Length: 333
Image 1: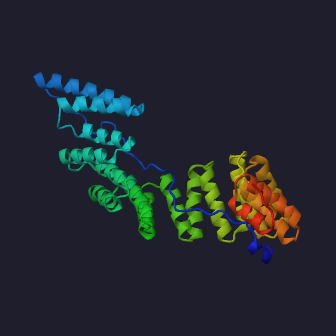
Image 2: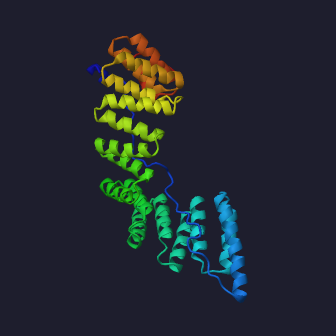
């Protein structure tokens, strides 16, 4: 790319710290400990409690959380020492983003069943969602102390370390997870993202390849791997990866934009221009592609052509393009 382009707008889209999903695992243990089989009058109470509990599970699975809370409370009123009622009440309140109530019920479940690792895990998830990272780490570690093979707790611990910007510890946690469960796609993906944020691109690429081996059409992993290859200077590999991503989501403009960026690095300007135009064909509001085309024209001193591309970007709300226009005597609205 011409050195004069340093003053142009074009830039490579990079990734921030993120994980596969905004919501971590909520371990929905479906009656992993059955209710006792009492006799006499207790039997009637147990059966009635079980009936309310099953109604609660059905409502919970249907995302009718207020109904589920009502049913679980009815079950709990009959058998107040049922740890699973407290556990699912915690899950319901988590889904409603009532984190204080959620933690309250997880704590109650653990007080009734001290080795309830799923409740410890979910309490950690809730603390993390509430940005109480130290308490989240404490909860995950307690679950892991009881069950060293609890892969999801290791995964969630890694997520919290990422959110707390302790990336080295996040790597250790994710690696512990995938050692226990080599098919844990979320952990491999999170591992790739964390390596990428640490500029360890070879390791990131290896992790993304694991995700893709498990899920061949994983578009996000494909795009992230292409970015890691780009940043690592593996431009030919990046082109192949972005083309594969485009075949997975043929109506998505982003792979074409990233191809344009990669072709520019390879000094293949015509291919870059073609890729940016493809991105615009798929998304007429793709301001980054307009800006890149404008920058290419600018390096050739084709300012009228550059102005047309920047004007189009400005039309779709790009602030940097509007600024370019002002600096060059244009007053675009």
